Image 1 (cartoon, rainbow, N blue to C red):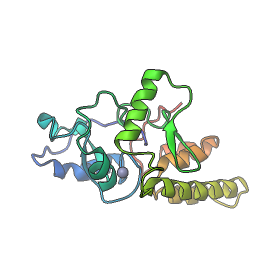
Image 2 (cartoon, helix red, strand yellow):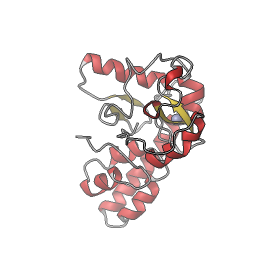
Image 3 (cartoon, protein in one colour):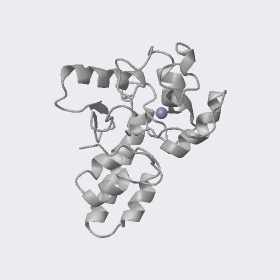
Length: 205
Ligand SMILES: [Zn+2]
């Protein structure tokens, strides 16, 4: 779950929240804010609009959600932001651990109260779908880890360029790429500043 810093919105104001899809994609990139896949994207209300009518067209409440994360799992299960971590308010990369077998868990060594909000978000959008009948994310992440591992080996051997890696990383699962390349500063920096992933929050120490 790529952390993003939300820019102040200076564009046109809309009465229909769906009109914010374009500015959201321009500001955050064309990926689901939760699972990081390129998919059909909709405007996602962090605090569900059914329970927070006043936030229906509020820029600060909007992210991007794929049908899987938004419609199939998150729905309106949360009342508001409380009790969860969110990509526009938390370091959602540092608080999660992405594993080669496709699972996602809270990062090691978190304080109990932080681990709880991380776990709540994992469950809210079913970020770890290993036990689901359809393991969409698990299987795709596993494949992405393999691609990224191969790219890393080739990069270290001088057989793959940085540009080629950035092109591969455009296909999604930004956190998998950052996990695999976290100890190679040149690639890590380029992923943090990738033009397809705008406004990635750089505070990832
Ligand atoms: Zn998603």
